[in-house]
Length: 112
Image 1 (tube, rainbow, N blue to C red):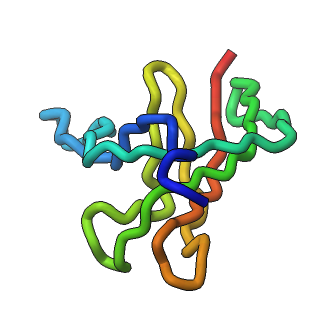
Image 2: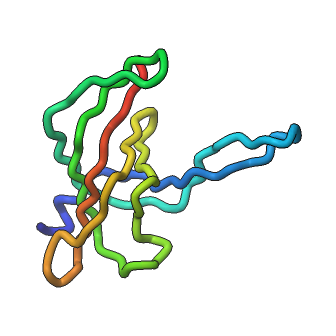
C-alpha cells in the first residue's frame, strides 16, 4: 500500500440525535472529517427492512492509520460519504502490522 493508492476523498460522518421538541428525537449525520481512501467493492446482496427493499455492497475501505480512541479513527456505526453515496462502517482494524493504514469493512447501502 502506498499513499498514492488512496485516491478517493471521503467524508467521515457520525449519527447525532437532535431533540424534536415533542419529547423525541431525530437522527442527523454530522461530518467529522475527510479521509483519502482506497475502495474495493465485493459482491452485493439484497435484503428487506420494514417495507423497503435494500441492496448492500460489501466494500473494503483503506485509509491512513490513526491510534485507537483518536477522533480521526473511524468506528463501527459511523459512515463514509461521497456525494450521494454512503458506506456504513461495520468493522475497523489495522491493515498492516505497523498501523500505518486502517481497513474498514463497510457496506454501501442504497434505497431504491
